[in-house]
Length: 241
Image (cartoon, rainbow, N blue to C red; front, side):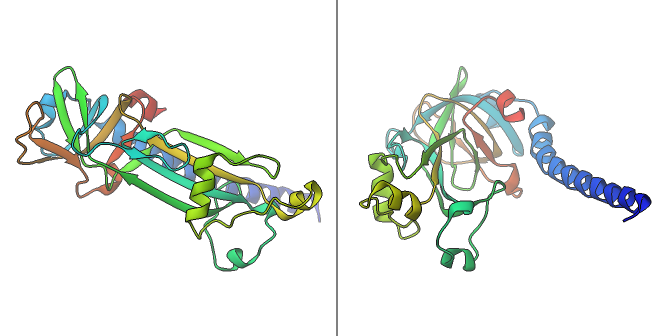
């Protein structure tokens, strides 16, 4: 291959990589734009809005609804998401690959994914407002447990594997060499919002009939633009970063 051809090929590769990075950057910038578009409002003022609002405060459980139990850590929480991955490079079963499982950006296969939530309140110095998180995008910090063939599984994760068909139980009863050959690396990822944590919410305010003392007669949930409904276990500044 001649030098001009090599230069042309290198330039094409550079432009392709640049285009991909630009596309990925635009995907990241859109939610940041949504966040910076409006100002934070006090919770007592939020119920007077009919469009998108952004609030920040403390997550508080509804005493009637209580909390949930996160699947991998058994932590009391108000909302959680989880994901189970398996390392593609060391996977020894090709059946699941043929069925077309999702693959993460770093090459892991997604075996199982799920989420759950319960209505809760966000509270600041001015009051509190109810959050209906069912259709929200959860931006929670990841808590990851990596399973290697020589590591003992925590009780909650072992119970999860027993209760789901999505993740095969690995047999570790053989000697160390066979165990190494027959098992694969896995990771169990859990993100959650716990009572008492700082929480940021961006969503649509909807008036409701609520006679509960001390709560604002409004709820934040999804509007016409579902991508704009976000709940994060951090401050607004943390969401932007």
